[in-house]
Structures are given as structure tokens and as C-alpha cells.
Image (tube, rainbow, N blue to C red; front, side, top):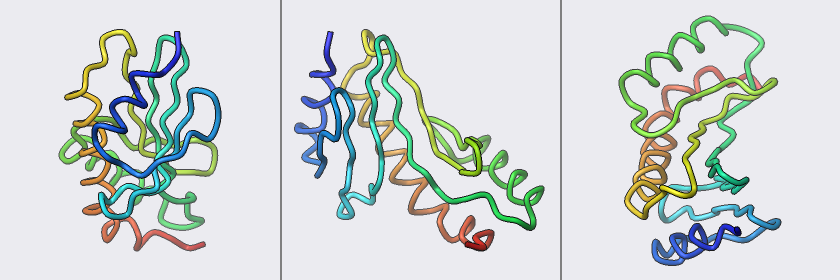
Length: 127
């Protein structure tokens, strides 16, 4: 099975994207507040992720506390996570049951988080 449903949804949403590898797409669409959002299909999962920032050298506890608060109160689809030395926004869905509304809802939630949380999280950037 391939990720044709994902490409169909991206076209329907009229996002600017590129297929960067088999079953992997990169959304670069500033008009819709989505930049550097990667969508990967690896049967049976669809993973949507975006690197938010590198972990700072200072104030990590304050940052991690803020991320957990945002996960609980503001992130509708997905969550902030720690991946190595990066803070990522990530959501995982099942390809077989994935419908257009769930896909669009996740990307809308990413757009909202990337826009509204930038002022909150940018104060933690050190590099």
C-alpha cells in the first residue's frame, strides 16, 4: 500500500508541498502557516512532525513545564516531544482509518500551534 491518500488530501487542501522521498512529503506553505512540516507514511502509521527548536542550554525545566502545559491546554492534535536535542511537534495516526477531516484537523492544529506558540517558546531559544 502506498500513501496516495495523503497526497490526495494535500492536493485537496491546496498546500504547497514536495514529495521528498517515497511516502514522505514536506509542506512549505507560509500562506497557511505551515513550514517545514514533514508527513511520513510507514504502514500502518502516518506521522506528521515539525522541528520547533533545539533544546536550550538554560531554563530547560521552565521550557519543559511550558511544553507540558501547552500539550494539556492548547495542542488539539499531537503533542510537543523531545527527540534528541530537538523539540518537535508530532502527531501519529492510523493510515487505514485516516479520513480527510482528521488529516485537515491535525494540520490546522499544527498551524495554530506554530503560530500562537512561537512568541511563548521563542524566549527559550539560545541558538
